[in-house]
Length: 204
Ligand SMILES: N[C@@H](CCC(=O)N[C@@H](CS)C(=O)NCC(=O)O)C(=O)O
Image (cartoon, rainbow, N blue to C red; front, side):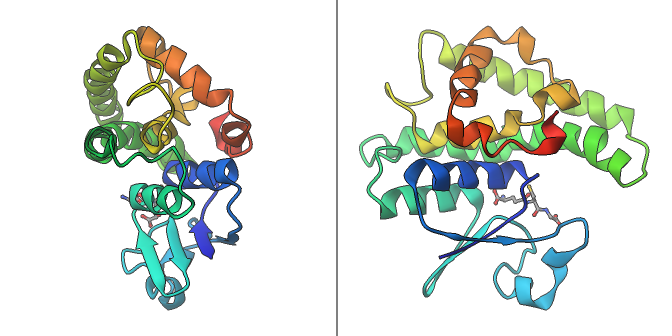
């Protein structure tokens, strides 16, 4: 199994952490994003979108980080994916890609990536991203009131999917301290050795 990744990518972090948690034997193939490896024909043959993560397991190619999470958890029969809870798990994974990643990604791009590329952050976009973050973090915080995990009473792939977006919370100044339930829940994820070993250097 070949796993194409970049260690600084939050979407890759969720997959890397799951591979570690499940003890899956995968060959890690580094895709150098700043150098533009994702736009090379050999990588576009794997993912025509030119994005990581991507997984190739024999004849099967799996794209989209959240699909990869489900594919791997299902493949090894892990409790992190539950057929009975699939609608709620999928709901959080769709929510993550539609809203949470959009908000956190906007701030990450402006405050961390642009300076690395020698560009000035657009402060209006930073404010917009933070406003979107507040809106959706409030919904997440309300959901986590009285709960340990997003779905049911144990961790699932939905928790990894959503948590990955908080990788750069501190480094980009996301106001996570305003959301005590999110902070408590994320602290439990951060305590996992698989989360610590996948922490990118840029996260601070
Ligand atoms: N929806 C995709 C998003 C993947 C994505 O945004 N990947 C970023 C890294 S986090 C990437 O490869 N960017 C390279 C580029 O846009 O050129 C997923 O969840 O897998």
